Image 1 (cartoon, helix red, strand yellow):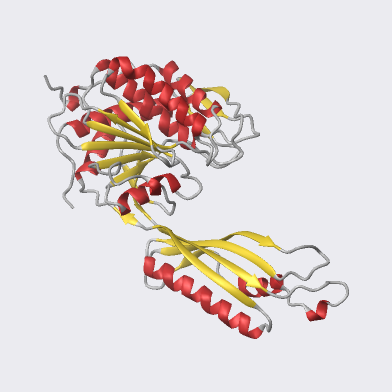
Image 2: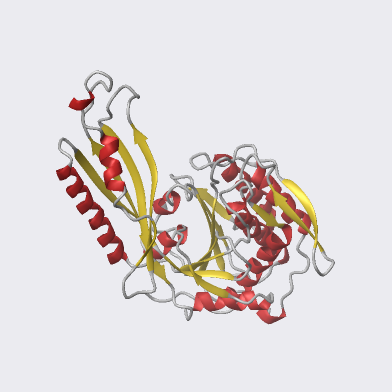
Length: 403
């Protein structure tokens, strides 16, 4: 017998289980490139669910991504819904010690704020996203709540360049819609538009000599680089006749041999991102012209300029049936959807570029990538309820849009 989405209630969710799962996760060290322990933890949790569902299957691909197949329940169609998050955490993230603070809300209710001890990040980015997915799956399997066929995709290397998502097979991405929990902000945040991101690297060349004996015979690559950098706009760059903008950032510099050597090689890496790829390409072209001009003016210099597309932009219409189902689930919980445009990237950029439509939702953590990162237990519980409501909403009718 089918169950109406409008009649469902998930009040039996265990807050203690959700808290314990999240604490287990943040205590499991998983820096980018060493996500194995976190992947093993998730597999351990999946193995414990096997008695609830014989048809639960998972695999780890060559990149280390964890891909889980879950059969549908009380669902008449065969479309596949993806829930996704990433296994890796930004440094410093080894041996996280979570600290819990009891909070009293304005209405007199109590909550728990979870932070690290201040020596590491907490890792709520993205373990506050993974916890609701696993806890909602456990609840759905045990209570046989409505859901379509599910695929969980837990990626590696998201924080360092979306490497896990880029390595996924076409088969893994052959699904109807993807929901990724990987953003800060209030519950209801729904990202349906995100930018492109281009990386670049410049190697500035000069000539090395002894800095104390014959500096006049050298060509200082740092001086060359400084002449270029002072001409490159940084931060937010407005675009003419457009409300949109670009952002540019020089993020790394290294080189030189010692204070007694005129440096002959310095490397800079930077990025440009925005929602208009033609504007990004013009900005990168402008950097090349600055390099050419300054190298001509400073005799004895040379340079190498490399560019790479990290990911492309996307925009998903709010009329997409998958977006409508997400918003319906939010409203069922009393959350008003807040569709926004972001200037940050995520695995969803890769999903969209490869044909899998999806959105990114907030996992409600705050101050990610900092030692002050935190999340409230009530928000993780709400995310868990939202996952269950989304399962039910997506089970009601097909949501795959023909390409």
